[in-house]
Image (cartoon, rainbow, N blue to C red):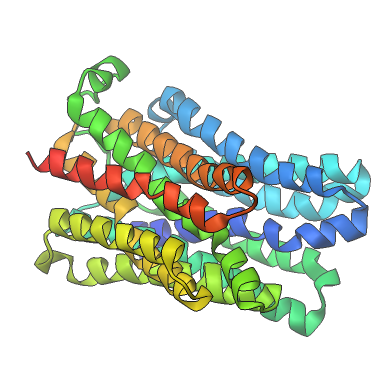
Length: 388
């Protein structure tokens, strides 16, 4: 059967599942790495930072080479790096210094994850679909479902076969990007910019006021999401006094499920929903969720606030991408890469602000969350400005 654009859309969906795998599988093994290879916690923490920094760098560098070598080669390369990193994670710690081996594997799959983040949205945007905003929202929901799947299936695997067999599971996860890479080799990929036209240059983008509003919106999207998501497990574990595993299920898992649900709802009923009103309402709901999380007198209500926040931030990231495509149709690869870069900056700055304020106030996470309310507030201001 000859591949069609439906095949391309399917491959894009799976592409975001691949990114969820490379971002969320290794953190499940951090304690195992620490106990097996006697790696100090300070170095384990560095793995997260390096993964983020490499993806950030790839976001920036992609603007220099993606248009020259083409989307097909670039997205297949992303799948190759993702699969290679997961496989090397099982091999390198045994043939070199364990930390250096793990770090090398992380860097390799982070290159794949960074490329996926830059490429999947414009590839999806170029596909002929009836409702671009609807398709984009549904696409981004697959990262959430991928996150949920990685945690649930990995936990089930470790329960049945033992966490000492994590190398087998890493190789099993690596099969997904391998298959996705083969699909992208054969499936049609339409050009993002029509033939004979040129995408906007950096200078043209930087001169656009709308572009800078969109950049701020992306920073706020990432920050609003991660400022709560990164601390949801701690709220559940410390506030409710439950185990780490139960805390992960009650905190980050609930957050991811509701975030994915918001994106899936718009993905199904998008033609009946005004994207601007949906994003504005979500921003107001997000502000309310932050206030509930930070000011609720009972820990359970704070956890409910975290869950509501997951639903409220769901549309922010894909909605901003869709608004950018409409406002700057000639933005091209440079625009998508810079938006991804801004989103990643937000993903880093949100939880960093919460952590900094919490530490300064003697470990008071609620006050850290309360200060981070600035992100959904600014998001709401940008939407009101954008409407004008």
